Image (cartoon, protein in one colour):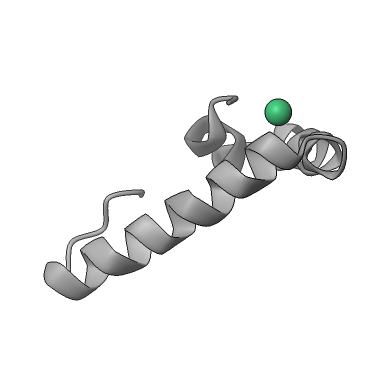
Length: 51
Ligand SMILES: [Zn+2]
């Protein structure tokens, strides 16, 4: 899986990553799992893990 957090900081890289996701079910699934994890963490502690 690519450096997702870095991609979020760079719109051009993020766009390229989204294109990659369309062709990579593995990353897409990992991204969904990551989003679920962040929601769970946010519920447990109101601290931003990703700035
Ligand atoms: Zn991938």
